[in-house]
Length: 288
Picture (cartoon, rainbow, N blue to C red):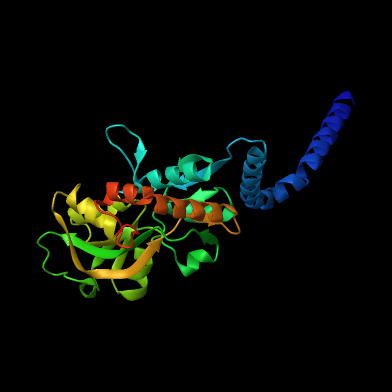
């Protein structure tokens, strides 16, 4: 009888524990929704914190997302292990001119394109092309660089002399780039997109792919420096493009940055930075 009583008591205890644990946790049900909204809220809080700092007489600090593998715009100096490039010098000059501090975080380009609309970062600068599709979710500064796409092949390749020759060929490019969109929309090539553009270049150099399509300044820089003349550009410049600095929608920072860019152009500092990285001032320079 004593054993039966103890057994019954144990069974009731186990049933009670199971009943308590089987109910759905309301906090777990809302976790997905909270996570989805958290990044946007964080972005708004960052901007509010910056505004409060400015009111207190302190420099506001804004978060900046950038890439680290897009020469000569943003890349790691192999000797110093520091992040350098045209975009890095430009955003630092803009911050100095506008009177705010920045904290730079490095990430893959495709992650920047998705992080800016969520408000995770205040600013994005990574050689980002201004497109109608991106403008649906991102506000851009005035254009600061005129670019376009160019095709490159292994030196000695006689099968590909222009974009018209890539149908049926395997063409490398970068994930989430306008060059990937161009290949998919305008050719019948087999598109192989890599997370990093340097991987795309290496795939051509090792003959895993037949050609690479990407932004002209980066292709030319890589061909002249890293590829040692083994990679050559072919065909015409495709799809004239412009780069802009990215912001979450309705960010007040955009106007501040545009004003700073105007000031840098008027003072000549913009041309100095541009010339340092590209060897000459932009064609529309006011000094010409």
